Length: 230
Image 1 (tube, one colour):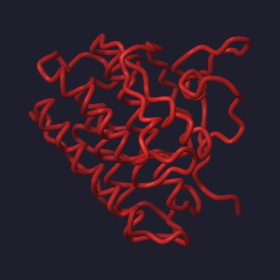
Image 2: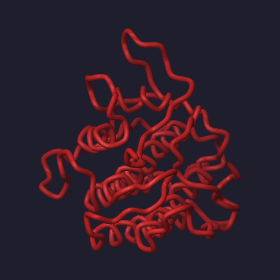
Image 3: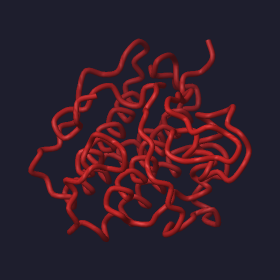
Image 4: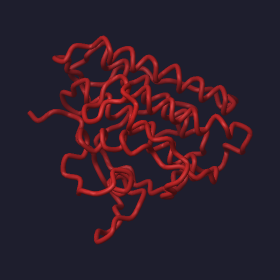
């Protein structure tokens, strides 16, 4: 992909990511007890919770050097945050316009001179646009993401992009953090139906090449399944 600080590229394809980041487990707030976060089915509340988690942890480190690599990605931490914003906005466009054969022909451009604080505000804006689109979309909505995808698929991808790349950024900045277990479970249930059992955080990081799982080789390529079966 083109580095997202200049342009976005096709978001969140059901594709290999090849990005294995650190697997720190400490330092997250788990929203499992909150009635605002669904236990099993991803929706607009899931996206809002994921973005809130990202901004909460990274907002405390806006003064750090965000030009360093985000974990094992080729992008910097700042480029990776811009990529999150790009994908959230792209998903919002799909949910709103419901195209049946491609992504809409637009890309979010975050100016290279944008600060970490400005970029996090951009992520917040794009996350709210996606949450709003999901909240008003009917259950019968279908929009293209390598095939027909429903609102739960776009919600799960928004959560996944936000949490996984926050994990990459915190790894690059040296911040101990792991994604909330309840949100990881939501992502696994929708995008990784064949995922092994176990701790949702460890399993999601393993599924996406970012962590180890006892008794299983580390993944170097992976896919998620957002499009509905034909």
